[in-house]
Image (cartoon, rainbow, N blue to C red):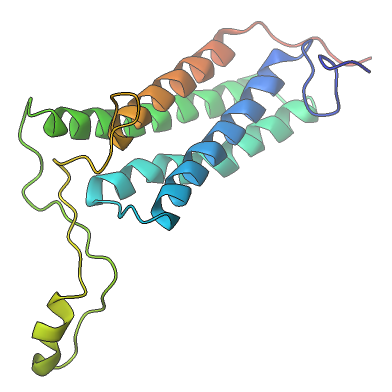
Length: 179
């Protein structure tokens, strides 16, 4: 067994490899988002929306991988890949919207800001005390730029690549049956 023909990736069955890589890509994107959050960056409302497609894509991609592993119907994997492409396109479009708002090309949402770090007070006396604990993050101001791109810009980049990979997997010819 060589690196191109392993238990999990088989170059002779590229659709199987693609759905596996899409699932791993979704895990990587969410893991990166969580690692930045753990290091002190607070996500805004749009950042949290951008993660939703990846949460949905993870189990869906692994379901598609399972269908390919058991030599299930190719049309089912193609449907999974189409849905994955739509999910990644959704995440990328929200990232594109946010990145454009960050660069000032269009206004961001008026209600953008995710309250983190505090809880909703239950008594009127706690209201003023809770205001000092709540941090509202503006969706139109990037917290950091890495190689010129904000988190939203990197989401667009990752989503574009994953969308193209999903679409490529859809047009691949049917797999050869295992002997």
